[in-house]
Length: 212
Image (tube, rainbow, N blue to C red; front, side):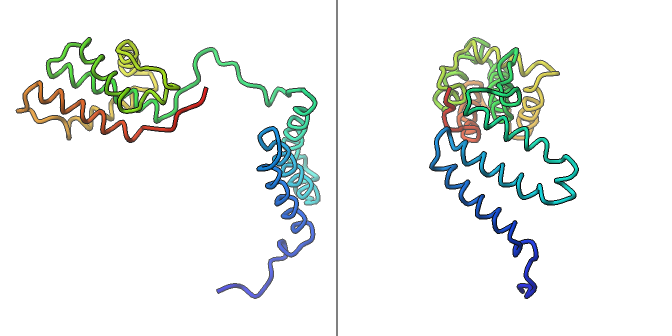
């Protein structure tokens, strides 16, 4: 049931003006240049203007971060980049996300399973690399080809107890205790079984190509 009493905030002129400004900002976001920066700046300034008239906010300095952000965005049009908008200089490659970490752990798990079933480490890393390329895992790496050397490096990451891949790797090991290849399956059939499971699991981690 809809209340018959109008909302005082939605009926107030300042709020209606804010809505109109945000509507225009959204148009600029999709139609403007610089990736919609003009629209984003307009929306930000509209929010600042609206809350500036709220005593609990405007009179307490709570809007300072938004003012600084708006100033930093505006400075881009003048060719200046404020510190808050500068890219962070990372000493190493950016941290991988959870999906990527899980994909690496899956590769390490597959190598471990294959070697337990009689395949040499060299053969296992090569087979896993080929499966991952066929399964589209290379898209996570900007279409760079995954090699046996890459997979071997991933195995080293997964074996480091303090690393970001270790937890995901252990989870796959727990899965293996429940859904591993049957013990009475021949080594050759078990190897093929694990490789087919690898391809199937890769479907969970396949993402659109990341542009570089």
